[in-house]
Image 1 (cartoon, rainbow, N blue to C red):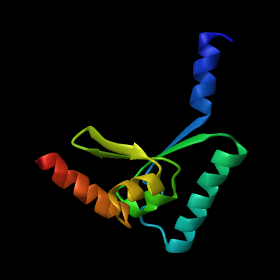
Image 2 (tube, one colour):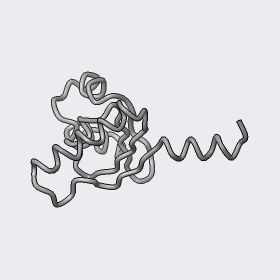
Image 3 (tube, one colour):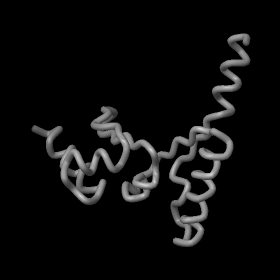
Image 4 (cartoon, rainbow, N blue to C red):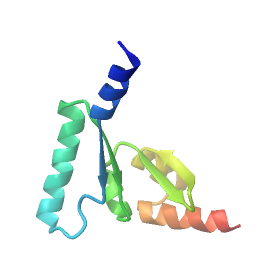
Length: 102
C-alpha cells in the first residue's frame, strides 16, 4: 500500500470531536456518547474527544489529562481512579495539578 493510501486510511479511521456535548440537554448528551461509542465498535474508528467536562471522560476507553501543555497521565479511567484511590476523575486532575506545582 502506498504511503498516501496509508495516510488517507489513517485519517479516515480517526474522528476528532472538540467538546461534542457542550450546551446540550442530558438526553441528547447521552445519545451523542452512544453514537460515538458505536462508531468505535462498529466502524473500528478512533474517536478523540477534547473536553473540559472531566466527568464525561469516564465514558472513554483511554483518558489523557493535560495541564500547561504537559501530559500528566494517560490510562483507562478505571486505572487512573484505582491508582489514586479516588472516585472521580475531577479529583484526580485536581490532585495532579497540585502535585505539578510542587
